Every structure is written in C-alpha cells, then in structure tokens.
Image (cartoon, rainbow, N blue to C red; front, top):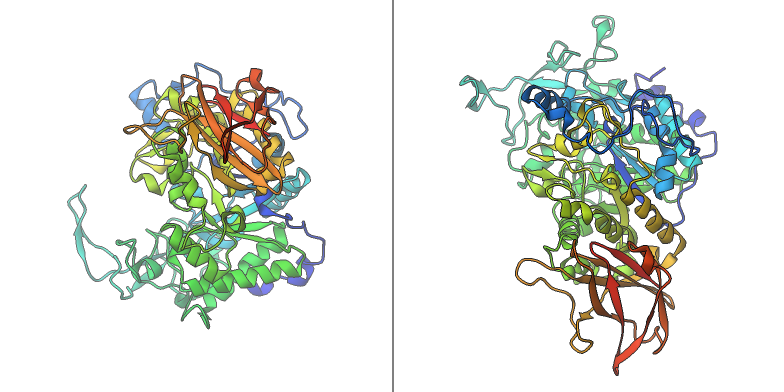
Amino acid sequence: MVERSLKEIDFDQLCQRPFHPSPAAWEDEVFYFLLLDRFSDGQEQGYRDNDGQIVASGATPLFQPGDENKAILTPKEATRWREAGGKWAGGTLKGLTGKMGYLQRLGVTALWVSPVFKQVSFDEGNYHGYGIQNFLDVDPHLGTREDLREMVKTAHKHGLCVILDVILNHAGNIFAYDPDRYWTENQQTGEWYLDPRWDGYPYRVKGFNDEHGQPTLPFGPVDLQQYPWAWPHSAVWPVEFQEPSFYTQKGYITNWDYDPEYLDADFFSLKDIDLGQGPVEGYQPSPALLALCQVYKFWIAYADVDGFRVDTVKHMDLGATRYFASTIHEFAERIGKERFYLIGEITGGRARAFITMEETGLDAALGIDDIPDKLEYLVKGYRNPSEYFNLFRNSLLVQKGSHLWFKDKVVTMYDDHDQVRKGNHKARFCAGSEANKKLALNALALNATTLGIPCIYYGSEQCFDGEGDSDRYIREAMFGGEFGAFRSRHRHFFNEDTSVYRELAKILAIRQEKIVLRRGRQYLRPISGDGQNFGVPQMLGDQIRSVVAWSRIFDTEEMLLAINTDADNPRIAWVVVDNNLQPEGGHMKCIYSTDPGQIGQELEVKQLHPDLKAVLLTAPAAGFVIFE
C-alpha cells in the first residue's frame, strides 16, 4: 500500500534491518548512467544473464550489422521511429535487474539511475522521470516500489552501488495557471493567448490537474470524499504537497541566467517548489523542503540506495541545498551508510561548482561543464590536451592539490542525456564519422584513467551514434523497441562481444587492480619527435594528430598511459617519465594495448638530459596503451 501522507510512513519499522554499507572510497568506483525507460524491457533474446548464461527466450533478437537505418527506410517509417523517441519506450526496473551481469562484467561498480517516481499521467514526454506527480511511488511504466527494492538488492549482490536521481527544485506539471498578462501570439496557429512567463509576481492558479491534464480540482488539499477519483493519478501526492504555499506560482523561466528568475520560476512546465529563504547560514527551510527531506529519507530506508544525484542544483538556494545535504547525510549515517554520496548537477562552470560544494556539503559535482567538451574534443583532436588536464590542476580558485580535491569531487563524463553544452544540435561521441567510432574506446579510456569518478553514459560501450535537434536522439532504446539505436527497430544491444565492450572491460579491470589509476596524481607529459626538443602536444592549425601521454603517480609507483588522436596511423614519440622514480636503464612494461602484439613489450628508460628521462613509445592508430 502506497502512503497517501508522510504521516503514514513508519520509519522505525523501515530502519529495523541491516543496510548496504557505503564504499570506502568513491574514487574507486566506475559509474554507469542510464535512462530507465530506455535501457531494458526484459524481453531481449541471446544476451548473457546475470550468471553469464545465454538467454534463449525473449522476443527481441540481437542487433546485427545491416540492421542500421532499417526503421527509417520510408518517410512514414522515419516519422514513426522519430515520434516513438518522444514518449515512453518501455524500459522497466525488472529489465534493469536482469542486466546486472552485463554491467558487472563490463567493470561498472555504481549505477546512476534516472528518476523512478510516478509522473503526471497525461504527458508522454515525461518518460525521463523529472515531472513528479507522486513523490512516494514508482511510475507504473517502470514497475513497482518492490521492483525498485529488488533491483537495488540485485545490484548489491553483484557488487554495484545504486545512485538514484532525485528532484527538489520542482514537481511535475501538476496545476494550471490562470494568467492575466502577456498576450502572446502562437506562431503556428496565429491565435493569441495569455502567457505565464516570470516577472517576479505570482499568477492565479485555476486548479490542480486531473489525470487528463485538466485543472478540474481545487488548488488546495483534495477532499477524496468529494473527489474520490483524484487518487492516485490526479493532483499531487502525498497530500502534504497539495498545500498551495509549497509552490512559488510565478510562471516559467525565460532568462536562465537571471537571479532571482532562475531560482523561483518554473522549469518549463515543471512547477517550482518554494524551498525556503535566507542566507546559507541560518537558512529557514520551508514546509515543502522539510517534506522533501522526509520523502527522500523514505527512499533511502525503503530501497537501500547508496546515494542521490540531485537535479538542477543551480536553480535552488544554496541554503536549501545545504539543509538537504546535512539532513540526508545525518539520516544515512544513522542507519550505517557512512559515506552516502550526494552528487549535484551544478551547471555554470568550475567556479560555481566549487563554491556550491564548499558551501552546501554536496559530495561531488556532476560533469562540470568544461570537462565533457575538453574530453570529447581532445580525443577527436580538436582541443589542446592541456585544456583538459589543466581542469584538474591546482589553481587560485580551488586552492587545493589536484589529488586532494578532484579525485572524488567530480564525476566525469562526455555524453549524457541532454548535452546542454551542445545547444540545439545534440550528438553522441560516435555521431558524424567512422573516425569518431574508431576513437570511441579512447574517450572511454581517457575518462576511466584520469582524475575524477568516471561515468559511462549507457550505449557508449556499444558506440551509439544518435544525433539531431532534440534530446530524444541521444536517448536511444538499448533494448530496441520502436526507438532502437542506429535508427533500428526491435533489435537489442546487450552485446558483450563487441570490441569496445571487450576492451573497455579489460581497461576497467586494470583500473580496479591498480590503486595508482584510481587515486594517483596525474601529469600531462611532454613529448618529442627527436629526443631533444620536448613540449606538451599542441594543435597545429585546428587539429592535433599525436600521442597524448600522461602519468599517474601514487607513492613510489608510476604508470604511463597514452592515446593516439590519429584514427588512421600509429604515432611514435619520446615521452617524459618521472626523473626520480624511474632509474636510467630501467624498463616500463606494456600491460595493455589496443594492439595485442605490444602487450608484454618493455620500453627502456633513457637519460636524455641531466634532469629528464624518457621512453620511446608507440601508440597504435586510434589506440590506447598502459605501461608500468
């Protein structure tokens, strides 16, 4: 039975059991982010189950070469495929539960799962999970609360933590305005309407929306004697959230960088929640924020999750974020989760992320906006390597050594579900050219073996190549369905025999084995073509086709890693190594290469200058190597 009120939650009973402990060090983890609706429906055929056995049942066969573009052969079929991407596709919690083996064998150790909460029922576009209608229930498209609990239990059994995506800033499109200003013309129909855009003042509200999206319920606590049909699909639940003062009621954001507009206006149609007021010190939480804290304590206790990814932190007061972080950390510690992880979606650059984390107590920032750009285009040869590596260096801003702050304070990734940085043209890493697909492993390897907590966006390990003018094109269905990747239909992609999956699994296994790759300092290494003139690799014109090498150092151990940004030709370069740790005449052994013939080969350390030692390194075309 799903509680209709927060007062019905029995925390004493929920907490009377052992809980999964937190990881000793989150920088040891490898994250995998998935949109639940787009991941698995459990109907795939021919994949390996959680125990590694081939599943012969199921209706959806494995994608094969030649299946690409078959869903868009005619304009009518292309429209059908494209429209399918804008609504619920069919992924479920049970489907994800059956794919823990696929993820474990890849080397994933922590799942970041998109929001599971019940969405407003009239909007098919809410498949992403950010339009909550019931904060205490799981959306029926995805399964049940018990399915969530079983998914987390199975993840833990396979050595995976679970990070649940949560929302504090807003609810779904739960009520309708009755606007009285800003006549606006609809550019498609020519009709004029009153537009509830933000101007700092509240709007009248017609009422709570019913399950059909009509404001037929009074804007206030719903009387189920008078409106028995309001439960469970209408208005908003639990009942505490039916209090009008929970919402700012000021219309939607038009200027995303204007304070206070981006703090107290609606996120498109998603209704802004009033979280409180005041400075960070002495912040006064609103009844809504207190209720949200109870909601998310419930999900920790009920499902035994290991952390939260907190959505839209930029759009909340720092004091609200700090109050929430303190409350959740203390509750988690009380039940034995000593390092319950709170990851904030903090847009606006490194300075904002650093300040927000220092003032609020969030544990990590997600994808500080410079990182995805520099990582992707370094691998593709369109950014200077120093631009990426300098993001992790000590600076006047951070005032801390790279190995002290960035190692577990930043979750790094290059593809994600909305790609705000790319504006109106969304494109996964592999979109656009065959060269990009050749370089895909390098992007995953660079992300996995440099500072920060690496995060893989689902489908990257299968080289998904979606692109277009909408988020939907980078949210392909891993299980196929009507909106399969590579413009296919009814073909799944849980293929553990593709080269990128296999090689990434090897790289992540080495990362798990070698503490230096998880916790070591890192240094971009100068290179030379002649052994005399050294410098960090740089673009010539608008491209760089070169060895890019870096060291990870932990205590007395150095590992040397390199990618080749040239997709077609191997590259050779002298690469600097640590002058104190590497003895002249010593050797560094290749423990991984995309060219298997290199594995086991040794490079001799040469003293090329009095204070400079180097090795002569070959990186295969579009390749990646590790030496120790």
